Length: 297
Image (cartoon, rainbow, N blue to C red):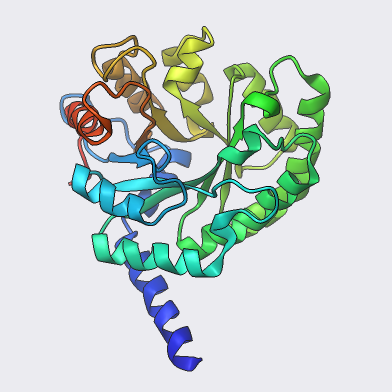
């Protein structure tokens, strides 16, 4: 037992050490950095959602990301009716081992299951979010995306929004103590996101900003990024129309808006168009993004 415990501790130390720069992602996301001119940029990490590459809650996702040439993966908790897969301690250890083996990081965690089992109304979802904070600490990350689409949609649902505010108020102290940011991704506008954040009253409630979702909803994403500023914890890179640079999202303008709010951190690809196949499309998109969002040097 002592040997096993020591091994886990060593893994945790190595992961935390390897993630020292990765920790910059949230610190940078939630605390402004000095503004840099776009022609001399630095400080971004490019990742991919594990469900985009077909490896939801699967440590193999890190190997795939390494093969594509990415910095990391956003790991989903998985799907279940009761205990979500990522709550399993053995699976968590496998992820920690794979982080070291592949030298690829876990960018953040995500609860996509909340689209089907809504946080606004299901007690299972409320417990998952609270327990997910502990998983973040174990895996050495401090952002968990809370999804509000499908059954969990809050748009024009005042009662549901009120319920979410009350639940976030209850869990926020635990998130604050753990240094974990609970990041809302939804169809809501910047103003509607700010309403939730202000009503909860916690610095650990943030926005997970998906540029394509907000664009599809009809919002001026370049203005919204500037409006939300430090309340954005992490970004999804996505384009519903084509490969990056060929669709409707102007990633140069996204970068300019990020500069204005001092954001330096993860830009996590959530692919929708895969004309070259999954890995080649992700590689193409990543190479395109690297030209606008270069890495930390």
